[in-house]
Length: 251
Image 1 (cartoon, rainbow, N blue to C red):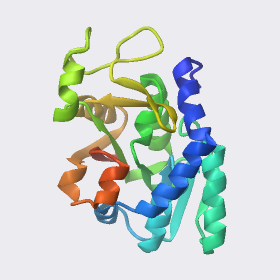
Image 2: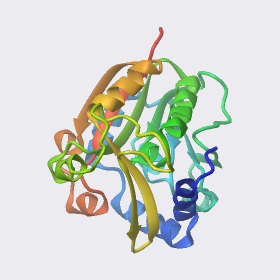
Image 3: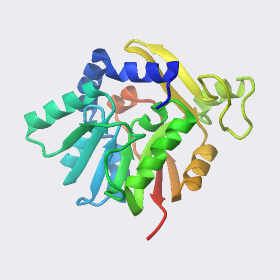
Image 4: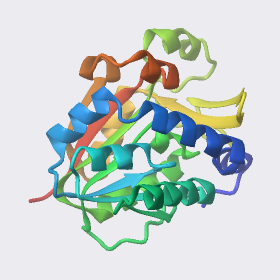
């Protein structure tokens, strides 16, 4: 696990009681997005075994259960998020399971899942390119061949971000990693009402190459607005993001 100030910022944010309470209130008020529902149902079968990484307090996992998915496991490295998700499951009589686990070191055997979801930009809230690659390799490992990894991220090529990143000095021309220090090109560490948070913003070209270089194929991507006409609740909860799907190579 990386030991740097950004790692501490990222972890402290999601362990904060204020943030956990916010996720509980907002995520269950908002529920599953129209875009998520459409993409999940087109990529995953109702009896698939699905892993919801960075599950938070269970917004996606409970949404999948409501859609009729019968085998969903949630995992998050925030003990506070997992504790709340378990409480909700118990109160609902839900059969969902939630555990505390880091995406970079998953406790499941090879090929256990028919689908892995990393929603709400969670993959890009792992600080450091090499650390994200550790998570990607673990996701690849626990997926069955031919099965889907579905995730979202901020796209720095969008009009509302493009000018900002183009004006950054020493921007790598390929959208890759800037070496040295605790941050990389594309990193955003910002102060919010809930605390200081970290997220990485990247390019479509870089994400596609990363997936293809690490055992995935059939890479597809859409903006959220291309998948569904989200409600004001969803748009206020999360700004525009990009969805990605890719399948693990093999038969």
